[in-house]
Image (tube, rainbow, N blue to C red; front, side, top):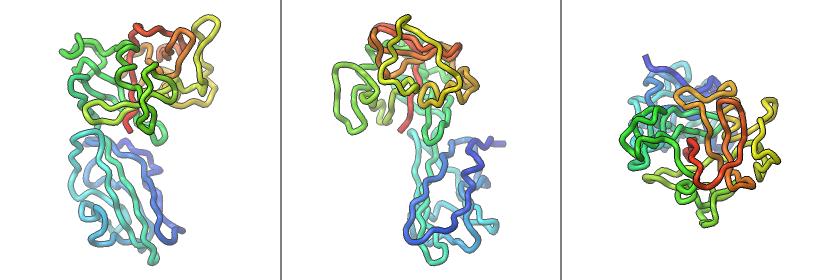
Length: 268
């Protein structure tokens, strides 16, 4: 039986909307749901508008649940669908995204073991290509870890595509591998620079965080399932050049260009 991974909030009820509205649903994960799994639940009296958007791919049952007629095939990172509904003579547009649970990056390996934080999807970068965090694949000398020198080559654009050749930072951390748009996460502490007098410090577990620290916190202050407990490279700079968060103990440390952390990547 396929495991459901999206939050109960996904089954919200559309109500009180007038005119043309766009609602962004929670994300789904390929392989973790069935055709009977509702991707959205609508208010009583709402109907699918024939011939609109991707409506032909979906069904609306008597309980108001929208489901796929057939399971989608996600060949790359994700599929996006548009569902157009009619409620009280108002046209409502619902956007659905289905994520792939394993993403092929060609010679750069795979993205595996996804983690959903808010509206973001983060994956473990399996550079060796064995489908695990065991460093046992045939790609990249059998190693998942990677130098900051290599990260600088891959992730040197800002969100608008402008390039910076001086190295990654909180703004210049975007790139594309095998046609997949990706981002190297920031440290997540909110700092512009992770420099510290001792070149390392322990992150306070009571803080509110994003990116790497949010992944660590959401996983119970450890590595997510399927990820290795080790240092993960961050786009946030430091006095030594770069920074990394250790998912084993919460230590934020400064690193230099040839250091080789493990990597989490956000799929955009």
